[in-house]
Amino acid sequence: MQTLPLPIPFWKMNGAGNDFIIIDHRQPLIPQEKMAEFSRLLCRRKFSVGADGVFLVEPSTRADFSWRFFNSDGSEAEMCGNGARCVARFAYMQGIAAARMRFETLAGLVEASVADTRVTIRMTPPHSFLFDRQVEVDGQRFLVHSVDTGVPHAVLFTDDIDMVDVVGLGRLIRHHPDFAPAGTNVNFIGRTTDGFRIRTYERGVEDETMACGTGVAAGALIAAAKGLVSSPVDMVTSGGVALTVQLLDQDETKAAAVLLRGPAHIVYKGEITAEAFV
Ligand SMILES: N[C@H](CCC[C@H](N)C(=O)O)C(=O)O
Image 1 (cartoon, rainbow, N blue to C red):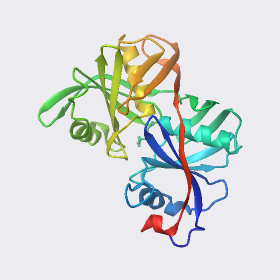
Image 2: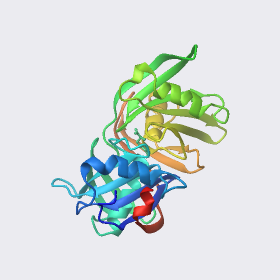
Image 3: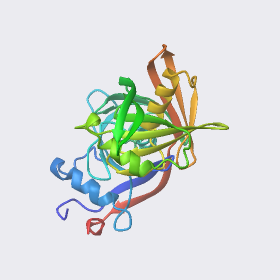
Image 4: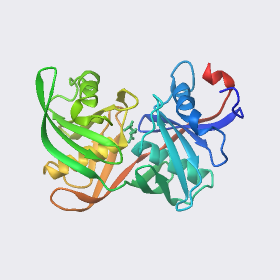
């Protein structure tokens, strides 16, 4: 990484505790072939900045901007709901886009509307719904639903959201042959006295994250299709922050449009030096 034009300015942001490094990459700084390793090294907690992922904001000919998004393990993902809120606020505050904007992701066009620290995004159309699949892991069978909300998500309902082994069971389902070769994020939803809680094992972070925006959207879509909720749906994520999902033009199983609303916080602004890669 020594040949990079260092230092590189960045913002550290989080959406409901899902944290990201965001870089204005409209002027190319990082060669494509180095982006994955660049991101993986920067996401190491303790040795470097530490984050669940890295966003490189780039130009677009058909929207306000586009992005490249890399998980903390360096894998590139199509979409990120919490990250989309953070990047939208970054773009607005940097003068890259107006408060209402559109940007390109590998999953398609995303619309966003920034209102101070709260951002609403219109997700890419959900697809590939699958209900009531029996998935066997470790000799046990689990009832799994799935949907793609920009990235693939498995959704399971649990009677004890506090006790479920999110990392152990999540990792097994994430790597299950049924979801190969892309793998999947794994969401566990529990009903509580005052609503729903969701915990997510995230592909590419390979751990439970404090929140997963596309996961909350997936959970809301599956729960609504099963008649368990009606729009708008609030789901409390692992970090204790509620995200709101609005399902527009919902018919009995699917929603034509999905809005995700929640916080996008700027934690600090910094500069990446050569020692961030040691
Ligand atoms: N790690 C996910 C992408 C980020 C999803 C999550 N951070 C969100 O807010 O949607 C994957 O590789 O499918």
